[in-house]
Every structure is written in C-alpha cells, then in structure tokens.
Amino acid sequence: MEHQQYTSTFPALPTPPEPHWQKVEYKKRPRDIPETHTQNKQIKLHDYWLNLPPPQTTNRFVALTEDDQDEGGEKATTKSPKPPPKFIAGVYNIKPLKELLVAVSGDDFELKVLNGNQDKFQPKSADKYRTIIHALIEKHTEFHTYQPKEERCFCTVLRGMHYSTDEEDKVSY
Image: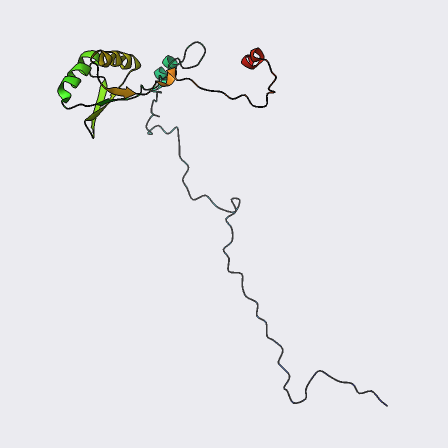
C-alpha cells in the first residue's frame, strides 16, 4: 500500500497574495549636537567701554556675625524659659488687681479675663514672677500657679542594674 502525501493547502481556497511592505521614513527630529550647531547668539563684550561699571556690593550682615561670637566661637546668649501663668480666683473687681500688678511689676505682664470670675496673669520675666507671688501672698489672694521649669525635679530610671548594687555605685552612674 502506498502512502499518500497530504498538503496543507486546500484547492478550493485562493492563495493569499504576498504582503506588500512599505518603508516608512523616520520622523523623529535629529538631536542638536553642539559640534554641528552654529552659534546664533552675539558674543557679549564684558570690557566694552560703553558698558556700565559693575556694581559695588558690600555685606550688610558682617557686623552681626562679629558681635554674636565670643572668643570660643559660640553664642553667649542663653534663653531662659518663660515663667508659668498664675490663675487668680474670685476677682469681682479687676481694677485693684491691675493696680497691684502695675505697682509690683510695671507693664511687663499679660492679663486675661476668664470665665467664673477668674483671671490669668502671665509675667514676661522670671524675676517679676517671684515678686508678684510674694505680693499676692501678702494680700491673701486666692491663686494657683505651676512650678517654673528650672525649679522642677525630675526622676530617673536606671535600667539593667542588679538589685544588689550598692547605693554609692548607683549614684556614680
């Protein structure tokens, strides 16, 4: 028996025509290469005799940098924290309170009226804070305030120490 050969073409279908390929031109612009690019700008003459002279400039802040530094090169000013406010209770007439504050501290304070016959008084310096407290205590005034930041105590926790460590050794840490 003879083997038949099969072909993949069907005699009833027409054969497709060969595709006709076209070459498309490259449409991207060419790069500007500095060697091929011609200079269109006019060259400036800096030493042209009709030019304006260059402006004379000085540093206005030179005096500030010299005064702020000490011999060590560090700033000597230290900022003290603002004193805490005082809350005065039972103020039905603010005039005598204001007169007392002006007599004791001058005009270096802020006074704010709160609800419930209360006033909030904020001195601007720490030394005025102490004198005002003494004046209010002498007049038996009801007030409360907070401890200033520089007078506050703080607690420390030493972690990782054995319980049998002597107290002198704990203090030295």
